[in-house]
Image 1 (cartoon, rainbow, N blue to C red):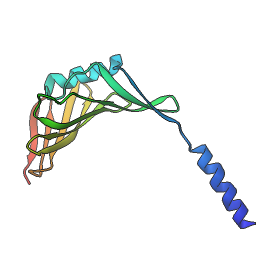
Image 2 (tube, rainbow, N blue to C red):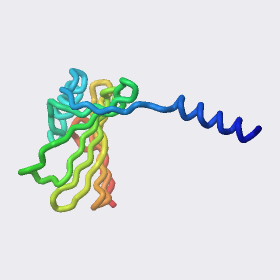
Image 3 (cartoon, rainbow, N blue to C red):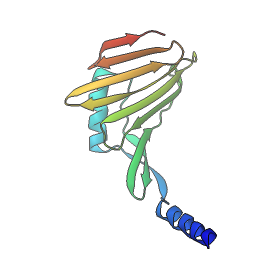
Image 4 (cartoon, rainbow, N blue to C red):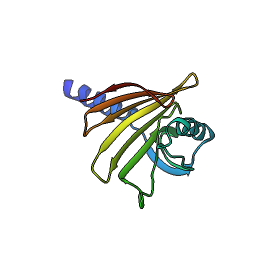
Length: 138
């Protein structure tokens, strides 16, 4: 009897957590573009792009990412994500020299805060509105 109860509990719990994940390439929303414009104003290495790949779970956006044509750039990899609340941008890039940099940029109360981690030099940098406020060298 315990086996049947355990089995039924497992079946019903897995059904309740099942989600349908879909992706769509779409034009950026107005709020996404506004966030990117504010970020790009202080951090021009975060590029503006008119298209985004939105990831949906049961018709609700759970993540947005931009893809870039890297031909003619100094990057071998460049990924940019936008959080669903349109308040944070997450980035990761690798230069052709193999330097890996990642971090996030958050917009709040009219300010743009960036945290950057350089994997190769082990540096952490925090910037507010385009000006470095903290640097820790590894």
